Image: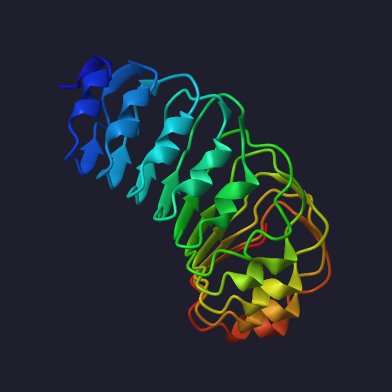
Length: 240
């Protein structure tokens, strides 16, 4: 059984509400602005509904919000720049929007953030070269299945705690940054189907915790670095 209809704006009257999970239903319409009246809210999960419209800027007024799950809906427009005001936000997941969304650089300034998952949203533009300057706690960066271009930022090495990096199926160009070899906590690296050229960096052999290395569908040349064969944790290698 699934609930349907619109999300009642009267939810904004529940001032002591800490968690709102209405995922996997058939709600449609917009996210009500009245959700901004929930000062204690820590989690909002509307995954897998039929919600439309824009992601409301009013969500940035939730001072205690830590987890925001908006995936698999019909949102459009831009992800609000004001989300950077959510200084306690740890997890942001917006995935599977069939309409184009714009990614604001401001979300990369939330220093407590652990997971940014924005896959399959038709995101365009380039990643800021300063993407990891303010994300010391980031563990997961998932931006696959978009239309992002430009180079892969070399400063990703500043995300020292990064465990999963997924940039597959985008329009990135240039070479694989050698600095990725400095993210020594990474366990999964996905760069599938890009316009990347050149050789596989020898420095990737420094990733002793890496379990999955997927570089398939790129324009790589040269030989496989022997340093790859010293990665004892490696379980899956994709180079087709």
